Image 1 (tube, rainbow, N blue to C red):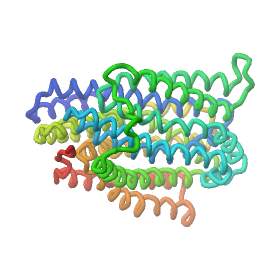
Image 2: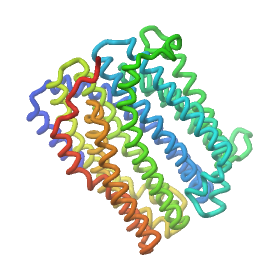
Image 3: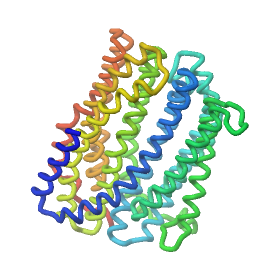
Image 4: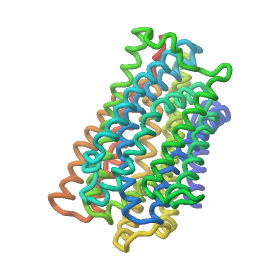
Length: 464
């Protein structure tokens, strides 16, 4: 409670210092951020439902699925880069009122996301064993993961298309519809999880394979909802008649955002996957505790994800409309709010730790690891919130996408990952100390992020 009171007081101070219309700002922020945060929460709840339900079956089932889903995590890095590049340009063109450009941007997103989805589908269907060997050494975990990927791979084929639709809905102020689609798909996913994992309603008990089937069915429904809702009047839809006739200049602008975003996303995504792989090779107990900690992290990060996405849209709209000073003021305000979100997230992690630790079936050793990881994560959340809102929101909203890649190369790949590798395989540190190494990057780069922010290179209009 003290954390929330302090956060509210800080917000009041921020409001007084900034010379902008606070009422209008917070109304816009809530209108955009809350549905996106809900959408992010609902998506994170799928992983939580998988972990909790499979955790009630057997520790190995839960751990194997957590490791197998790292394949989709890597796929999402490519999809995120394409949809974010589209959202950055789309937010500014929406602020400018150019709907034709938005249709062309939609086409570009579908093109890139479609190719990525096909590649990851083929990987899961053709070489699932090789993929699982990256993340685990235990043959039981590998076998369970293979059975999961062969079914879940079909859902990866559809994900890119639905994510493109949802990205366009966000930037064109259809965030409520996007949140509804994601929420409906997630609720169905959780329901199907219960049926297929445990074998309810006369369905055979499928355990990990049931979680994969539930995900695939819900993805089909999600895509159908996206297409049906987008058929309404005034919604932005793909211009298939111009699918291969996108202006070269827009292609160039899209690539200018996409490639730095992809570089940053791969640095972050493969780095995070490396963390999971390192923890997965420290034993089943460490891998199980890390799996649960990751679910909690993703659930609590929904708040900063929502604010971060809203920040990119709000700042991008103002910059695209030529209101550079207002866009700059909004960016400063959102950066300040990110610290408040970070401290609130820290309090939430500590608050839910007892509930989480006692909510799943774990060995005593795994339970000990989980408690330590939650405490370490509570500090990590401050850096995660600040960097998500400032880098992925404000800086990206103005097209300053290269900085994210630079910062990740230095803090993650030159510091955090080498430390974790040395600690795990050379010095044989405790899994908790290795886990702490994986959390160094987010907290350590805050000063650098603030320095970059104050250079205000992100205050620019990207439209033509």
